[in-house]
Each structure stands twice: as structure tokens, then as C-alpha cells.
Length: 200
Image (cartoon, rainbow, N blue to C red; front, side):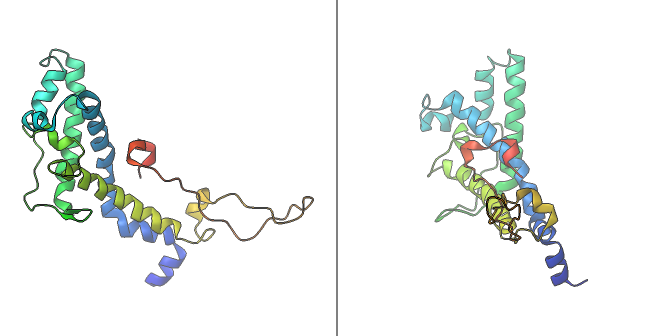
């Protein structure tokens, strides 16, 4: 079977295999966003960027958990940070620019003693790394979905569940429906709407 035949017979599988390695990175999107949301809820508008540059993640976790005495909060924050750290360290080396800005070659590795400011969104300074990571991950998903919706509706059985409703072009008494399928129905999402069900 030739590549062209495979692409025509299995268009979704072809797109999936094209992006399979990149799609693996999407497992880091939700943990990164989740920890950033935690940081924002605990520190947003209560901390200057300068203070956030001086406080480490370890200090933040200990402060929020009453020096580790509140074991449940400590474990929750520790787990969320470890997942964030894994995602950051996995993706940061793959990102070399954000919008029109080249990122420095010495991208920061995420550690317990890294400054909290790295976990705060910002269009400049340290915040640009987080923006670049999130943009990179969202862009992977968007490129994949764009290619999926470009597959002609009705040509791929595995995408039948995405078919839009069929419009009845007949008279009100006719039960005949158009043989031409409509386009796929996908909803756009923004980063503030990130939930596990919205990520591939």
C-alpha cells in the first residue's frame, strides 16, 4: 500500500502519526496551567515582581503550608510543583522564541530553589519563558486540530462523531437529507478555559 493510499484511506491516522511525538508533550499543559493558577490565586496582586524574584518555590510551598505543618496543603503544592517542574524542564529546551522575541540560549531549568517569578505570566523578563512554553504547547494542539478539521467531512469514519448536524434541504414533508456532510464541529478554547477534557 502506497503512502498516498494510506493517507487517502486513513486521513486521521496519517495526521495523528505526523504529530504523535509532539502530542506527547501535551500531557504537560494541564499541570503547568494548574500550578500557574495556584500561584496566581495565592500570590497574584499581593506580591511585587521583585519580591517574586527573591522568593523560591520551596519557600512558597513552606509558607503556604505553614512550614510543612499542614501536611495536606504541603503534599498538594509539592505534587503540583513537581508536575509543573517536569513539564517546564521537558518543554523549555524545545522553545526558542515567543512571538517576535528570541529567547536567550541559557533557558532556566526549573528547580525547588528557582524564583517564583518564573511561574508568573509576563510578556517580558522572566515571565516570557512561561508564556513561550504555554504558547508552544497550545500551538502544537492547534496545528494538529487544524489539520484534523481540514480532513473532508464524511471521508473518515473515526471522525464521524465530529460531523455537524445534517441539514434537511427537502420540503417540510420530505425526509431526504443532503448527501453532502457539513463541516466538523469543534469549539475553540482559551488558556483560561483549560481543563483536562479540553486537551488532547
